[in-house]
Amino acid sequence: MVDHLREELGVFDGISGKWPTFAVIALWVTVGLILYLIIGNLASILMLELKGVPLQDLVTNPEAVLQRHGSQLLGANAIGLALGLGGIALLASWLDSSRPLEYLRMTGCTPKDLGLSCIGLFCLLPIVLSLGILNEKLPLPEILQQMEDQQLVIVEWLSSGGGNFWINLVLVAITPALFEEVFFRGFLQRRAERSMGIVGGILLSGILFGLFHLRLTQALPLAVLGCYMAYVTWRTGSLMIPIVVHFLNNGLTLAVSEWGSESLSDPETIPWFMVVVSGILFSVCIIFLHRRHE
Image 1 (cartoon, helix red, strand yellow):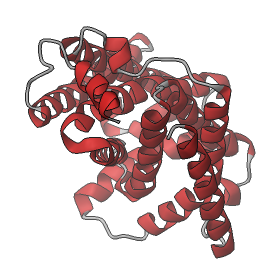
Image 2: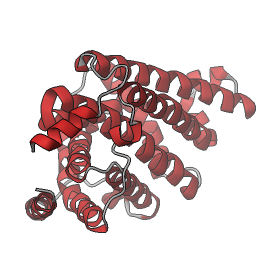
Image 3: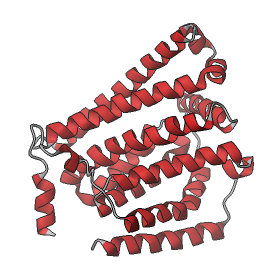
Image 4: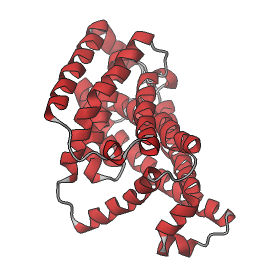
């Protein structure tokens, strides 16, 4: 254990490696989110301009623009994720460490670890869905409800079969899985672990991941998913696993929206016995995964 901690601390040998952790996290989270929003919005304007759509239409009637140019807007968001979150994560890790790939845990993984982690995701999904139903019942202030309604426009467009499924899979599943994981489970979690410990790093990564999506009606289930992906990142030592888990979660959601029934894609209730069984099976997966790396 002592050798493991020394190895962890030894990664922080870069220019900003010895800077105060909370200051570094606050700096890069703020810069990353601002760049993501700016780049994503600029890319949206440029793509719509190339399609001959005036900016005023996007402001006055975003639903109509989305119906006609949803793929372009999702593409702009993907560019924001790649250059904003992904770019900042790479820059921050390079400044923190002379071994940025090791810092980000960009290493291979074993098939057993990957399989157990994916099974754990499927076992966790009924719990996540039930938390989402509970979260939606919590009241929101009017300004936050307006933000939620803006996000729902995109969700409903995807649920109604908007755009090409395979293009959406790249923009909604693959791109977020890569760049959100590099930022939240790669840079942010690693940095938080240094001062907050393993549990603190997992919780901070998960909570900020839940809030990042700007859907407070889904913040709780997203935070739980984020904490699970943070746990498997730390336990296996590989960022590849949460990338795959994230892709499976988003891809499955997209596939159900495309080909599943409305009751399956947006359930009103989850049977209590399914949640109980889910919790038991998920606990078994965690135990097996934990014991493999004790």
